Length: 127
Image (cartoon, rainbow, N blue to C red):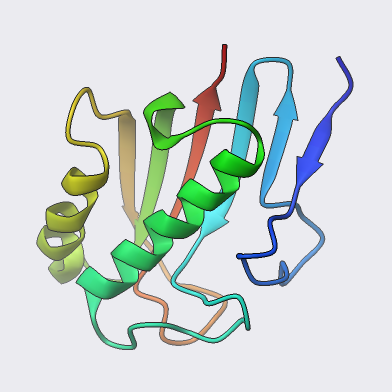
């Protein structure tokens, strides 16, 4: 099966040479999403809960474009700007993955776009 790329219109244009989702067979690789609106502007400045919500909605849109849902996500990597945002991110994250959450790694890092507090990437397996 050839590789398929997906760039849903509800997500902002990528800020580099990448696609929001790439599917190869049953695997879908989801690019790191952040709290950006379709216009490319930051949503929820300074609010980790709002940024996590928008970030996960963007991840949901990316996996849906490839034919899946968040229930198909088997692995995520969460990037935070500050460990102080860990609890707030988890509060929202658990509402998106209430049952059998995917495996996850969480890292503290910096971001290309100023004001970003969280970024999440993932891998999904579709039937």
